[in-house]
Length: 603
Image (cartoon, rainbow, N blue to C red; front, side, top):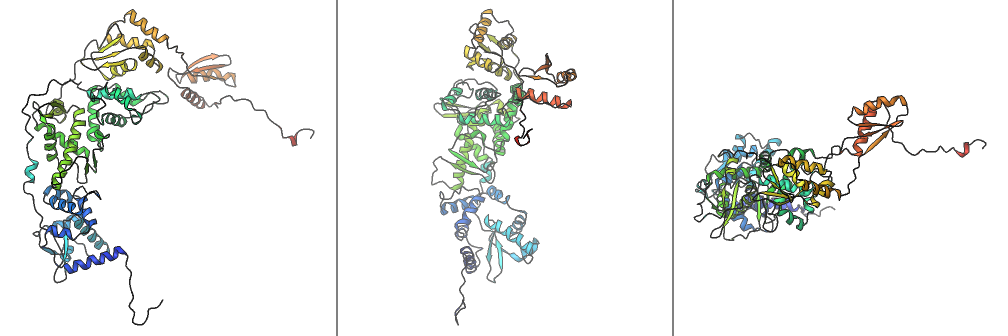
């Protein structure tokens, strides 16, 4: 439709484009803002800009939970810390860093012409490619609040740095010494844990979940009742139920090592599990600790929801806490909350630049944002100390009635960080087990392979002062149902105990085994070549595959070694026959050839 005479055209801009034009107009009308205070500068930004800046500066900025005023105050507070500014600068791209370097050469609050700076960094605004790089770099700097642009009275555009308040005592905070030890009697004698308690507990949990069997249970499907029962058999035992996250932590370590994988079809065993149980406790613990320290997830806190952390650099965080422990006196106890506060202050940037922490702890609304962030970090540190550091024996945690929870660094912790030589491996004890008349077994020299064997046919009774297991009718039948023989059990007991079993014990074990009524089954194949002259050659071929071959009329029966499945036996026989140039085929019901009625004789 044509416009009438004298009627001006009306342009309808998209909302975003209209807002952009309005913002540019406001900036032109504001003029030179280089002398404006940082608080006033932040008021010029819209909510989206404030939210983006809060994310870049590591300020908790969950939409709907923080007001604009809170975010603004937090940004003003964080901008005064040199370490936080340096963390933001590390995120910049190459072009942005070059521009920032030039802008910082002039005092804060003074301007430099954008055209001159673009010429210095060789980003020509008249060329499409370099102009785009210049725009992207300036956007990075302005989103991070590091460099601002302004319009000078002569109309030229310029860049400047705001005059931020600087916190002068921040470096001293990073150098503060450890907290004072508690001035109270040491806690009473703690129940002595095994030196390799976590590795031992892992074996217990693996056996509980059925590792190495065709049906491995999932921890997520375990009932609370089942979890509480296994809790009684752990070194790191909870009061009434497992310690928060401990079972999940052990399961995560097991998954990392493929220890919960189903057995191999051919060998009916899990090769990773078989190799694992043959390693020493010292080797196992070192391997598990390396997995934990290098894990990119917070695996020691999987089953808790009172503190949520995203974007964290966990390997760096754990090792930062670890290297600070030698500053503590290993002979003294420290309040756990004060220790967590000190470690948080000394590790304020260890979780990385992009970390976000949301905690369920009540927060004092009067605290400034930097102190609030440090309080959230204390929660993360305390959770990590209670879990991974305690479970690996790096620290001990106890309770003093007049003080509360206390902690101290252990010799294991100092050895882990290299501050002292590790303790030598424990000397071997002979005999390794002691067998009592009631078929209770005392484990005098615990090793992974002995624990794994004992838990196959005996139930754990207690762990301290010495580990004891009891063989019962039910526990023996459990082992026999899994494929063990009663002779295997008696041989193990005699070899590890150094003495022959008493006749009464042997009779009891055999009596229990007989009540199972077990019938052994083994797969076999009948192989019958159509040509009789092939029998001898094919028999030699199959015997070369370590298969037992027994003549059976015009054919022969082929059996595998103990434990070989029917599927594996058939596959091995077929492969051998194919390699010999034969065509293996399972016999099927003969099919009658039905003639077509239309072509039948006499039709």
